[in-house]
Image (cartoon, rainbow, N blue to C red; front, top):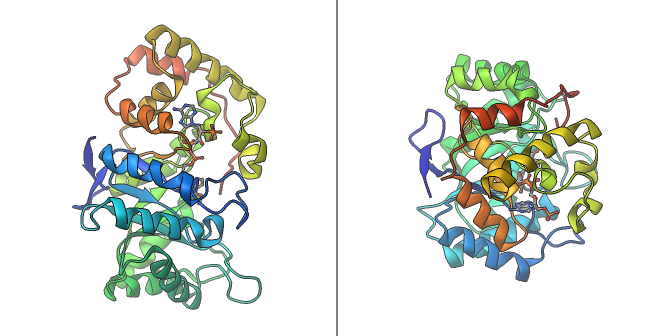
Length: 322
Ligand SMILES: NC(=O)c1ccc[n+]([C@@H]2O[C@H](COP(=O)([O-])OP(=O)(O)OC[C@H]3O[C@@H](n4cnc5c(N)ncnc54)[C@H](OP(=O)(O)O)[C@@H]3O)[C@@H](O)[C@H]2O)c1
């Protein structure tokens, strides 16, 4: 495994981040396709043994049970001081008033619930899961800064939003001397490259680390177009992200992977890893093979020509995944 600094911070992270949305009690929350605790633990252990030190979950994943499963597994398999544990806030956790969003009340409540489910005193990277148009940016940024000062959070990160929204939040924090975001977790892969227009140049300019989510387009880059799996058949959110015009990119991945004699997943991840702005893709792994391919991708070098061939069939997409 290779390790890099997260953006312009001094924090070391592994080049592969394990996305823990896959792990959670299936009948809790909105992801019916998740693995339960018994099935999840060997994969989390395998990740630790492969040198992965960076783990991403969210309060909302499987109604908090992802945090519980991941927290318990990491206590058993890893050393807390070595790992970088990331979670998120914004999603609705309860019906009724103040059950979600980025108000001061919601943030201060949700961090305590997350810490208790994760079984730890602090989160390394606390990310806002989305922009909250119903809360003043000043209120959110000051509440997040207070968590850092209270020692509950080491670094702050943000996730999918428009570049102007991210810029506004960063500028507000800077103007008040509050803690700024060090990372952007956004939707970026060979099938969805709209982030190359505004968000990625912004992150490069400001020294913000980039952590792409769904780097394999939720599995579509790993198999023939239209092939369903247990997850894809039940993945409502993923169902709306990739139009039929993406088929040509998947065919390019297939062609080059066959020529190189490597699995498609390795090739598609390798392309992402060689983009200068990308710190660590957040991969999903429901089988041991998925982790093996992700780790192998770190060492796979694409040629300029292969990269161009993978990029060539791309067609612009409507903005999605915000
Ligand atoms: N911030 C956000 O809004 C946001 C949104 C989405 C995700 N995320 C984060 O990103 C993480 C990853 O998301 P994701 O699971 O959608 O990522 P992904 O890596 O694009 O998709 C993972 C899926 O791809 C397939 N796959 C992976 N490796 C493979 C291999 N080597 N060979 C064949 N198939 C392979 C598997 O599909 P099957 O299981 O179908 O076989 C696996 O479940 C999440 O866990 C979460 O932490 C964040």
